[in-house]
Amino acid sequence: QVQLVESGGGLVQPGGSLRLSCAVASGTIVSINTMGWYRQAPGKQRELVAAITSGGRINYADSVKGRFTISRDNAKKTVDLQMNSLKPEDTAVYYCNYRPNLPGVAYWGQGTQVNVSS
Picture 1 (cartoon, rainbow, N blue to C red):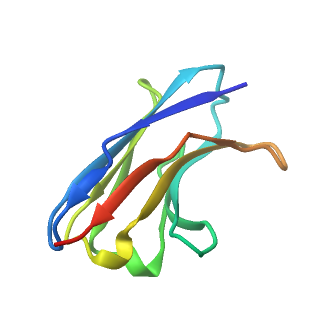
Picture 2 (cartoon, one colour):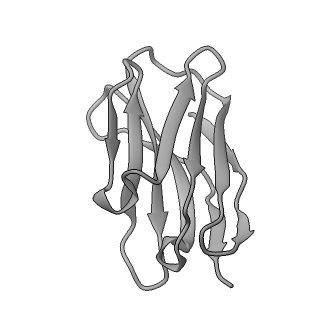
Picture 3 (cartoon, rainbow, N blue to C red):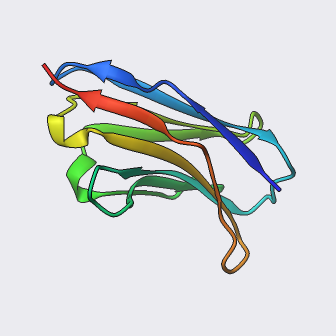
């Protein structure tokens, strides 16, 4: 079992920035894996925001390209999401995700709320 702990959510004005962090608090992770961030707004399905593989391959949702940057530290077992130029439509609960290179296996953090509002 892998436990993920997130931090960094909050309230920010449009155009502002936030940085989300996620750490593997417990459990053993495999060397080949993907870590990422998903979000879920009220009444909507959970969607991928950004993901990064252990080899450094990155994937962004079109809606955040050019504004968000994902990074990870394999030694520290952390993944961060730098969010700039935030928009009200970025308001959601953001979830950290870890997927080892095993079919059907995924772990989630508890979620952190991001509110973008003036």
